[in-house]
Image 1 (spheres, one colour):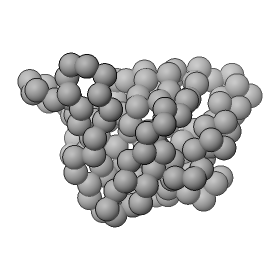
Image 2 (image 1 turned 30 degrees about the vertical axis):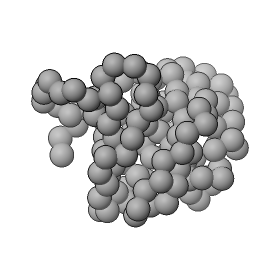
Image 3 (image 1 turned 180 degrees about the vertical axis):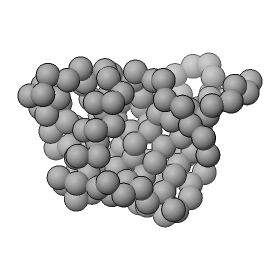
Image 4 (image 1 turned 120 degrees about the vertical axis):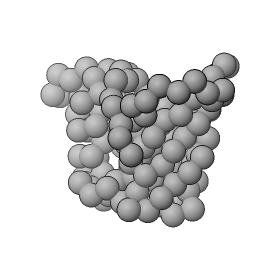
Length: 134
């Protein structure tokens, strides 16, 4: 898959279930310490995958590079799996649903890929459409 990154906020980032509050708190504290433009919030939504388990999803605003760096560091620090989302397909295809792609990581290692979709209109939550192990 070929992806391009252009998002300054996302709702397809997640942390292994049971670790949401402490990880989001750590992400916000680290961003503040480092002076990075980043703020994360849990939004009481969980996604369950067949291959990787359950994840507490969170949304964030700020710098995409800071978000990616912090989520990978959180995975290593807490020894948990994380979803690093917000990858969009390069080609522009008109569809009735919006798509978002994500990588499942354990530390620095990518262990799988996820595809999410949500309706174009309204504020419905992202649903897991497909997943693959790496």
